[in-house]
Image 1 (spheres, rainbow, N blue to C red):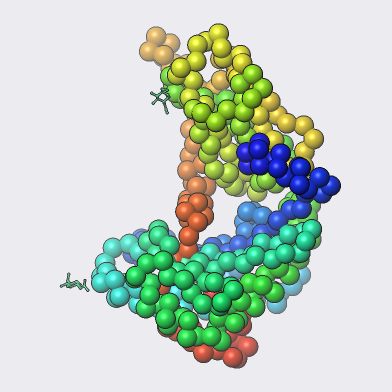
Image 2: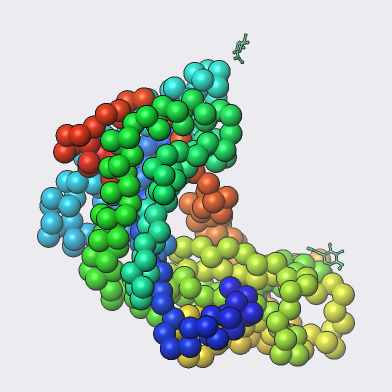
Length: 362
Ligand SMILES: *[C@@H]1O[C@H](CO)[C@@H](O)[C@H](O)[C@H]1NC(C)=O
Ligand SMILES: *[C@@H]1O[C@H](CO)[C@@H](O)[C@H](O)[C@H]1NC(C)=O
């Protein structure tokens, strides 16, 4: 969020800032990838992963203490997800096969993804839902919750759109899941996991630089919740030029990280002290301000004259980068903001109770 946007929010919502909480499910179905499960589904609440299932284990796993306990205490809820994990695997296998045929793709690696879920505003109670599918990294088809029909951004998805539009019973079930069941789940999960999901934790902030001529990266890791912003300022003013904002990424412990790079190639050394990096966490009183100072920059760069100096720091920076790369994988699709899905033929008319579970999951 930019400073201006925050100012806007503060002006128009002076008393309480309402918070949008989200529950999202990401499903990835792949074909042709060796040593990787064909089907992987993850559940995230407020961007923190709490559940996992794949086509090897075929069992839903809690990924946070609260979700493990929830599944222990409520085996029916676990059963619900496990059934969905199984049933949607079969459905997706059919989807990907049909798509490959339609697109004349006999071999190679193909990926079919779905993102669905809802956002719930804890002040107004407003709910926004979304269901979208992607194929091979591009938007394929999305569900319009106003009309309960499908939107196909590309000609390849038109056959699927017509097929799915006709399946009104399934579209109703989908709508019910997104607008009714999903918001109840978010509230339940936030309550069960409140000690971790609603905690406020400030990050460690470092300045990193690859070589003396690279941009300086201001890196914050370990913060929670993900509603945070970070920027560079010069003489107290936020900078927009020569600045590159990274994405917010999830750490394994459920906290987040992000970085903002500043290109200093046209700044003289005397002017460095005018710059500082500011990290602001939503709900926290104080910002973390880090002054730009050569002495505190961490780097793994070794000048040719002082060879054996930097491997330890290099290891740390390398690990951070590796971690960022690993985690980015999960978020690639989100960033593109798309979903994809191929022609669905198998989940046709459905009025029996089992198809309700199906839709919620599928
Ligand atoms: C599908 O691939 C085959 C073999 O490569 C080719 O002969 C055919 O024209 C292709 N069909 C379409 C619809 O692209
Ligand atoms: C930094 O800025 C300079 C000139 O303003 C430009 O030539 C250079 O490519 C930039 N470096 C990066 C990494 O963006």
